[in-house]
Length: 377
Image (cartoon, rainbow, N blue to C red; front, side, top):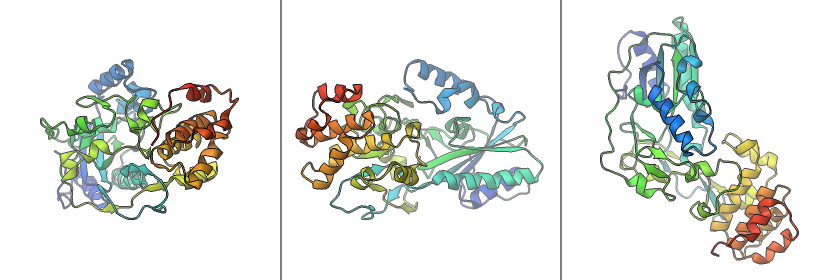
């Protein structure tokens, strides 16, 4: 099992020094694994991609042979030092960053701050110990070159939950993961962490779109966290379940008993984005504020798309500011934006605004206008 003790390990071995530095840098778990190819993981990725479960997701699905073989990234790699960085499991109440009378969009907890930057600093600190000892290193975090959950499981960081997340004992899945690849022959962990889920299926039953189709298997075509990152039109059947989410979804984590028992974690800021403000911003301002998120094609039109669906679900069709946002986006240059503005206007009981798209020949807009209107709020 990975080192998750409160204090740094004692001893003079290179492994112990690396772990101690990682722990001192803020990692809540550090483990060492062999760098052998993850053959079972590669087969799983290929099978799920073949079944369509990955949708258009790229990341580690893009090249499974690479993402499951660390030697493709570092030719002489012998060990993986895997670390878990914690992010807040609870958010501060009453600090939304938006006027309470205006509609806001929700952001998943992991994305409220740049936790990957903190993770990389901790991984870099461990890599420096290895470099000082004469070894080659490569740090990977949120990188399509490594399936980090498979590496974390092998390193004894935690077990695979039914929602496909890694759960770290005492910290749940409120962590981001990364690894240091090195040519150092470090002692590996003796065994993976045993399954801690048992018969529990709260994440399966709690998913608002039934995206967890089997234990540990997520259908990205239904997963709200993926749909807000994917390009193209958000499928109509998932727009109302999306509620006010504009980036990510925490539902399967929030209902998880091990996650709910985490009570000694820092409280993070409530990342509630003012939807009227976001929609009233320039593209440059949107990317300046939110560009560290994964935005499809680096096109802010997709964040506008998400915000329009959220606005349709939580806005007020009689609010002048909301109406102004709808009006502006029904005449937006991007067809994908105009199409979702049509949906939002109908959802808010404002079909009168659709005169603004009369004569619009864009396929997305025409299809939206011809579709069955959503139930008005």
